[in-house]
Image (cartoon, rainbow, N blue to C red; front, top):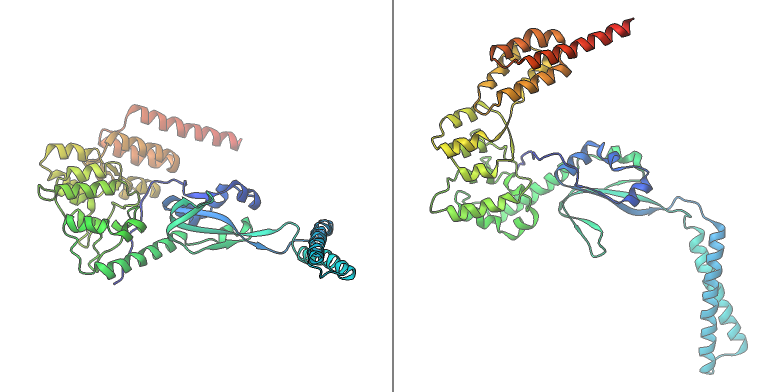
Length: 410
């Protein structure tokens, strides 16, 4: 059975990039150098990236003086070893003067020869390769050094900072390996499992391999059957009641600590997780997703209008619903697209004053004066959302641009 993945949507943070100051110094770069690579940046945002020193690359130059000094020290050690052998042989009565001299000289020459030959071909300043790898977790090893844990990407090796740009696909490799691991678990133990009740879901979350490899919540993002269901969409098909309340709350508590759950999922019928929560008037579910950001859809309006519980309605109004279509219309500077986008102001989730202000600020940076004045301002004025401050601010901004242009042309 093929198990697909769902895109992860997490806040942008790059605390997942782990590289020591020593390695940065050796490579002659900063953390920003790594984050300019989109693959590393994406992986550091969602998982962990570890950069560490790898094997020695023997292409340096030999230092004859250093080799000679170390050879002398080695010969001294060999001389001492030969002398010690002579003493031991004398005690046992097996040493003649000639053989004693041979032992002493042999020890000295052997020590010098072995060390000199080794150092003759050893680089003066050893160069290293560096390993870049992504993983789902990070911890410390016995030497207090960082190590990756859980599902890993492949190892990518570079010789210098110029090769950083060649690193690709860290996140995709983790997701691919993650999905394969999840698929193996499902096929081995849960092929015909009923994920439609809280008891079974709780038992699944307590499985040793799930707890070990999917502790951050990816188990809720992978498809669990050929119908396209995920554990998340199946869970929010369940309405909490008196019979399942205890198990339901235990699952919610587990989910609170899982940072990688993507709540912007839809089931095979196109019903989103947030719609399910609103349709079932699920206060517990609303509390779980209160800090998550959801894209606006008309279906959310319909779900909101059907809510009968006033407490659920109040909580729903506090959700973080993002209205992106108006800004896309402004980018295109299309009157028709803006006409359609303005319908989103009628949503019960829309903070009209804030959205209008954000659109004006966006338009100041991205739209020409004619479009702002003749299209955007007219549309906002029709909805009584064009304040005097907005108008004055935009006029002054464009007047300043015009004055600078005139000055330049002079």
